[in-house]
Length: 339
Image (tube, rainbow, N blue to C red):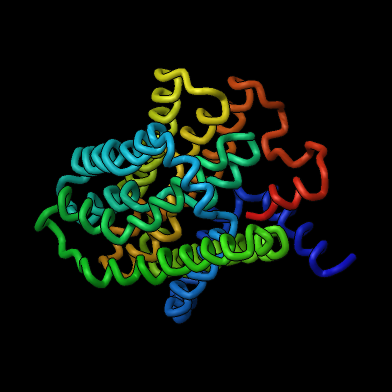
């Protein structure tokens, strides 16, 4: 077996344990104490590589197809950047009115772009991949404007927001590598993703583990000495994230969208690029802002697997929650495993 085939198999094994990767990484970061904080400088670089690899499957053609009929895309953007940030702000203000930094954390949790890893779950459950890729691309490119602006609108002068530094960080970590990956995919007419996507895909999972562990280390003190307040933060985070999935389900049911669109809308309404949010929280805010974002990492993949099982039962896809047992050609398997 060659190196390429071995890496594809490794990626398949990592994909099977996706629900466990981020909670385990947080545990490693917490148990490491502050020892991993020495590697905090590497986090933006790791994240830039992850974003580049993930964007290799995106092209201008994918975006153009969705933009011809942008209704579902606009609904998703409204859920992501109007409805959910307001819910996050309201929940944070209701339970933590005495701590503007925790409230800011709940706002940040829902103003960051949708998660690239949603591609995995949408692909597993045969959702609208073109809609997902177009959303990720547009949401990513707009993030340097949307994230600081949303924080300013919802938090005002309650906390100091380093707008320009945050915009530069988003440009470097997300926009530039995304644009580079998309242009490379377009230039090679998709061959770069077919050739290098599957063997490079394990880097995304390993990078995700490293980023979460390092960021978990930076707030290990708060997590190791969790109290009733921390338990409340985790509970409120869980409830608000679940609300995102339910809103996606309600909107797709209301409009009676087809199965593929419904799958894409539900996953993308519920998932966020939490590793990017953690990087922003750690680098540009006091530690308390990180708590809701890190809390979301505890169960994002578990929730995705849970809602995927429910989606599979309600919309007619089988009983294999990981979607890894379904037979198919080598090409289709590699495409599915490419992130």
